[in-house]
Length: 202
View 1 (cartoon, rainbow, N blue to C red):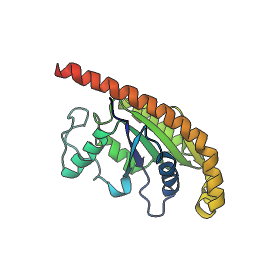
View 2 (cartoon, rainbow, N blue to C red):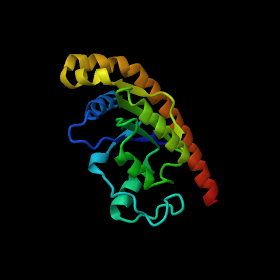
View 3 (cartoon, rainbow, N blue to C red):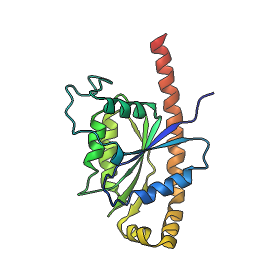
């Protein structure tokens, strides 16, 4: 029997006083009861890589890690069956730390699903649209449903516990849609990758 999909929750913001911790806590609370997933948090603030300076692009030199740190992170990415990215938006884009992480790897991401929760002035929409393009180049599947937390919602979430609960409660149906699609894609693509591996080793 196949194991449940392993999903890496990637927290993209590295700021000291970041908003990301609020949606992260909510997502962890909402997923804690689920037995059809195995979730692990990957916090970029605690896993910053040096700026990209590899001898060869990761697509041309798979798993040719240049440091123990890069290897350890690569192994965590490799072990995941899919990703749930919590991303902020600055100047209509996503964070440099997230781009730097992505650029250090390739085969670790291939044929896996990626999903998004965005926050910011327009709910992180522009950052997510850019990330969808990057995901396509990595031969990933971008899960269609997303969760958006808009600028006017952010202050109440920070300062008012009752408002925070109401806002997140209203977002639960969208999160459920995202997780349903993420589970389908993670399961289907995991099976396909196993089949490919069996053919290659035969």
